[in-house]
Image (cartoon, rainbow, N blue to C red; front, top):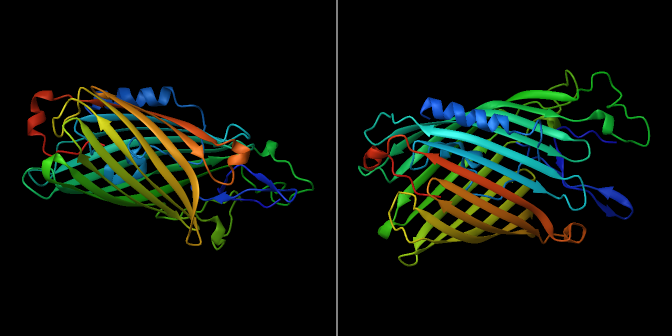
Length: 377
């Protein structure tokens, strides 16, 4: 058996009588009173050490996981988000992932229209027959720099840092002969390491209340040593966490008084694995106020996901999504329909994903004087 350090596997398939798995190196990975209560809520319902290959489909409902620069980018004082995804449960012990986050604006900044955002995020993931667990707790901060006097055109810089823990159940490892790694007394079943990530985003208004945005982030900048071998030599290149590069963007275009198109994309590169996800929401609402959440809104959308290998685009999944905004709460549900070569084994079912996002405004009377007017995602 070949020991794989912190590399996640898609569920294996049979090829020529042999079991095969494709490796992934995508690890899983207010005011103060409200923030404390929210974090307590998240911590209370967090499954103990559960996780999945962190790979969320909801671009709009996992902003701080997508880019640290998205911390504090919303039209309210505080935001709480919970995401849960289950995948590949139809034919194997697949992935189960929970992501919880809370962030807020401090209403401070060097410029008159600038602001500062801070946040906290926890990720819990479990995958595979060995119960490979990933748990992370990170803090993030962002600076929102306004580029005009209206506070609706700005750039954001973000930093995220924290601790990641990986764990597996050695007792569930099955090999045909004695394995020199697992039998080694220096083989660890649990490791922890420091992680550092950076991000940047740019938001610009268009005519008629439309807008567009672009962002980019780099995760695992410090390339932590993640070997399960105690005192592993740092020259083993395969034992370092590979940085992940993310590019994302989107826009909002009003089709009519009540209908809006919200296209978006995300590109992931964690060598040698790459992915492109593109699609759009169609939003219907009778509330036409700019920069404020409507009383209610209904969304329906589709995204198409490709995996990219050696410059070749391979179809992966179609993501069907429904979303409902009601006052200060946003509910999103999606389902991945697998269309890759794995579709025969999975019967086309990738997995469901559920997200709940809740906003809190502590100073509603000052909303018109909000320094940064953020587009609603």
